[in-house]
Image 1 (tube, rainbow, N blue to C red):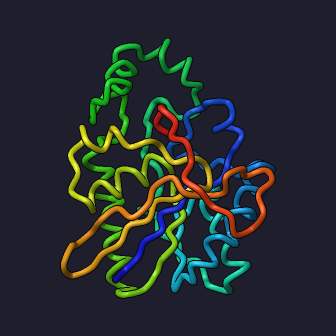
Image 2 (tube, rainbow, N blue to C red; image 1 turned 120 degrees about the horizontal axis):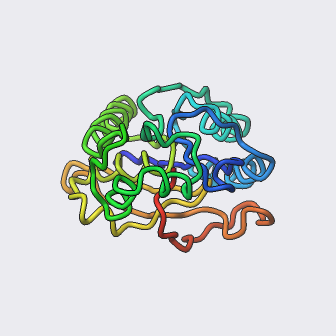
Image 3 (tube, helix red, strand yellow; image 1 turned 135 degrees about the vertical axis):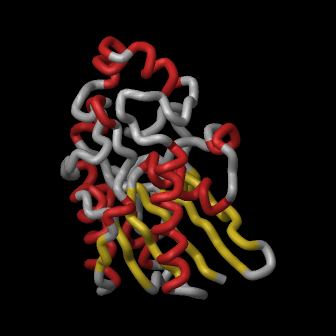
Length: 221
C-alpha cells in the first residue's frame, strides 16, 4: 500500500484578507507558522518516508516544520504550485467580482475554465496529478507527505481518483495546515481514506490530537 498525505500550507496574510494568491509567492504569517508547528507532530507520527513541497515559500516553510522533526529532506517540485489565477492574482475577491463580473460568476458557478487567464481545472489536474503519481511511484509502498495548496490539492486528488468536476466540487476545501489522505493498492487502485484532517484548534492543540475539520464553502485561492 502506498499512502499520500496531501497537506495544505499554513495561513498567510493574503488568506486572512481573502486576497487571491494563486502563484504569487506569499509567505506564512505568524499564525501560519504556528499552524505548521502544531500539525507537524501529527504528521511525523505517520512515519513518512519522503517529503515533497511546492517551491512557493508558504508551502516550503510548512514542509520545513515537518522536516525539522523527521530529519527528512524536502524535495521541491514546481508542478505542485497553486492554480494560476491570471489577472486576479493580488486582488481581493471583492475586487475580482467588481472588475471581472462575468468571469467571477462563472468561477463561482464551477466553470472549469472561467477566463481572465485563470488556469483551466483540467490543466491544473493534469499538472498536480502527474506530480502526485510520480512521487507515489518513487516511494511505492511507503508514505509521502506533500505540502501544496488548497485548490491544487483538491484537483490533484480528483485527477488520481478519476472524479468528474461536478463530483469534486462537492468536496469541502482544505483548511490551512489540514490534509487529505489517499491510498493505493493493486486491488482497489487509488481511494480516498480521509479528508480535511488536522489539529482541532490550530492555535492551541496538544500534539497527537487530530480530527476532521468543518469544510468551508469557498475555494482556497
